Image 1: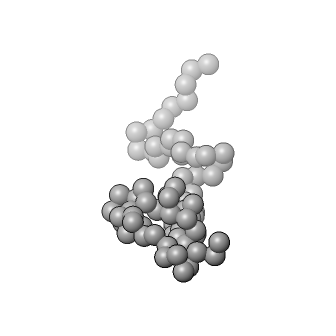
Image 2 (image 1 turned 120 degrees about the horizontal axis):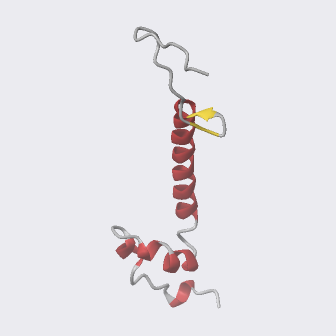
Length: 82
């Protein structure tokens, strides 16, 4: 079967990029909002967990710029509950 005639003046159709049927133009705002919400959630989690020694040693001391803030902060003996 010969190809149908395509006018050079007609619209140039091409397939739109999509992920499981959702076009990328509609997914970008959703991704930006989700990333912003996730960043705020991680920040709040680190803020509220900054008093826990395990979080300080495993996460906060390893941050490149602000990790030194938690270095060398020992608890005084009067604050030790044991």
